[in-house]
Length: 116
Image 1 (spheres, helix red, strand yellow):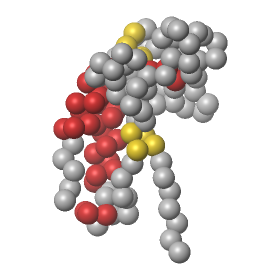
Image 2 (tube, rainbow, N blue to C red):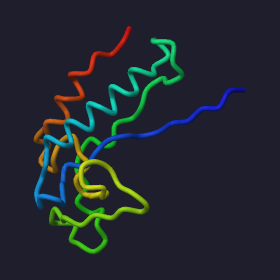
Image 3 (tube, helix red, strand yellow):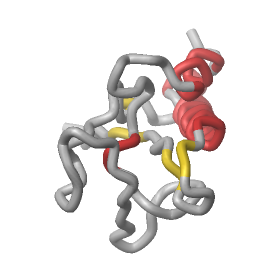
């Protein structure tokens, strides 16, 4: 038997440092993380078989201190959070927003060449 790990990766689209949505930073992080997986893929002699992008659409109900009907701006960092603000902004992880409008991260994901 060989060990198997299934994991998710991604970046949220809210940057508390600037106090607003930051699609560019989410796109940069998503593309870099995807490229890292590709660079270590089994097709290239590595041990990685892929990853699950987290997540498709924003989830407005994630912030317990906010409202399920509002896109809350709260975040937390249990140790250290992701780029660029080091916080997990739970309601802002979608590659698309709540109305299914694509964010730049969705297109950045498509820019990474998948090895064959």
